[in-house]
Image 1 (tube, rainbow over the protein chains, first blue to last red):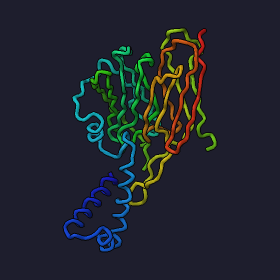
Image 2 (cartoon, each protein chain N blue to C red):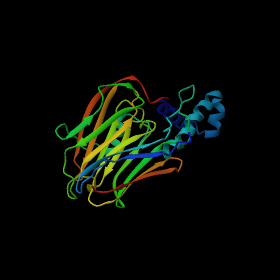
Image 3 (cartoon, each protein chain N blue to C red):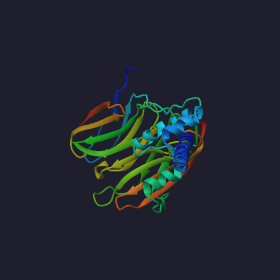
Image 4 (cartoon, rainbow over the protein chains, first blue to last red):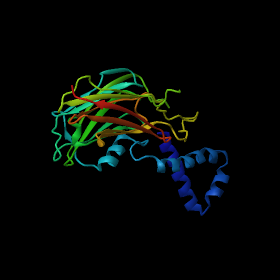
Length: 178
Length: 110
């Protein structure tokens, strides 16, 4: 969230520069102490640009839009088994496993399983890419959860169909730090 | 943390040809979290965490995990593969500092 604030201040400053025809240097100097804080936001911007495509500081809606470009998702409750604890006492280590009841043949298989934690600052947790040789679409991992919220498993099949299931996990002690 | 990069693979002891085998892989790794300064701004640095796990069996990639910092410390992953022939199962972990850790298991049929 703070990074968004940083983004806003950069935006505000840029537009200010446009309005008054000032250079960035002049704006910075004029802003003085505030400028230093804003520069932090500015310095953060290149980092964001280089950030890997998968994990970004964004809302879950943005993440889903970025990954799936608004493609419709079907309810996958019939085929996806998402195993999560109901209550995670320690958000730093939460076991999750996803099994998809699907054939794994070269013509029809599960291409990706995404695990997305809605309330995490970086919502995308992991993306697993399968080859048909995997035999079964199954993944397990220990993940971190920042706070109580939904965890989704999104399955992309080789024909592009998206299926989704989600479950709420109650987190007693958050595990994402920061 | 001299243990960084230790990989442990757990494969069932008896495997039959054609089985779909579930494997668990564990790596000792700090998986650094995002740190913030007192104003809550994210500190920009190269956080050391694993961002890719590649599973190969008989030199073919079976599964790839792309991970973010949301994966727990000393991460554990499990996956399956179809045991068709005896051979080597290899799991490689790549982190953001260029570290590459790998573990192998020989798949034999009993």
